[in-house]
Image (cartoon, rainbow, N blue to C red; front, side, top):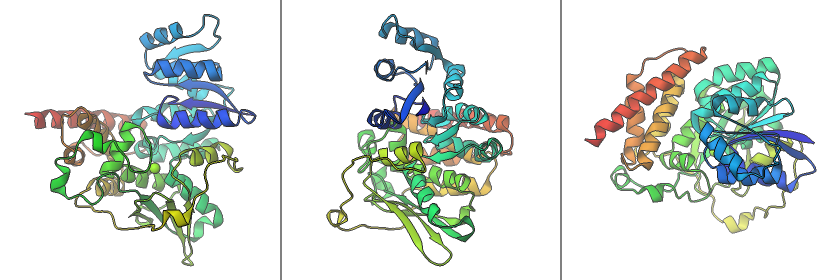
Length: 387
Ligand code: MG
């Protein structure tokens, strides 16, 4: 029986983690959950999975949650950053699944690593912001960092077929999002509702917008660099609109290995939970004849500049990836609040990167400071664009 602490239980990944646990109750037990503001769904999860401990974002929501539970419910309720850390490090947990949205995932994930937990990583921002520090901590504690991001799970699986020293290239696939093929002019006019409607995957709002701008792929390039310890030059991105080939690796003999599957997040989640075993998920088989044409094309860097911004941030290094990420979080929120247009998301990120001071990525406090500064600058830029 594997004991799981789940950070981000009410989000899209969290709900799918719980679906796997529900399907394999003989293998997994949820011991702790953390969520943000959705106390209704969290209450239902508590009643179903009976964790020891849960955390919500603040004291008010903790009280609201308690009111939704039976009076004799033994689950302990905590809140805030401290609450998240308690969930991430609960002694009983063997694996902590990090599935919170955005920068908020970094500190609890680091706390879980320090407490010796294996990590199922869905929160890519953790590695984008502090990849050097996180990977050093993983090495020091001897824990496993198992990717849940579908592309990284694909690469992780393809890497099992060879040796690291023989790896030549990592090829990340990108769906291209809902605006694939559009010009810069057309992108000026796109709606929020359209941006949120991903063609292949059902995902949360933040990652849906990131997919539409290609920033998601940029963040994944940075994530891959740290996770697989490769040079940025050895990472390529190819647009593959059908999301069937989840990513590929090329070895130095010219062999290219890919992982394919239907676009269903339960596949990478299950592999992270069951590694190195595989669970009988009973999903529909991939029918290649039905998929007909699998297409591949170069990313359009003119319409979607976010991807190159991410490449530039990780090449220059230091705190710049954290700055890129923070500015992007602010800009995505502003877009969702109808404060800026779609192309202004990447513009805000580019301008913030040019303003915020560079610094080293060996100090967590420098990274957090750069994150805060970038948020402040990006908000100012959004405000200015309103007038
Ligand atoms: Mg992904």
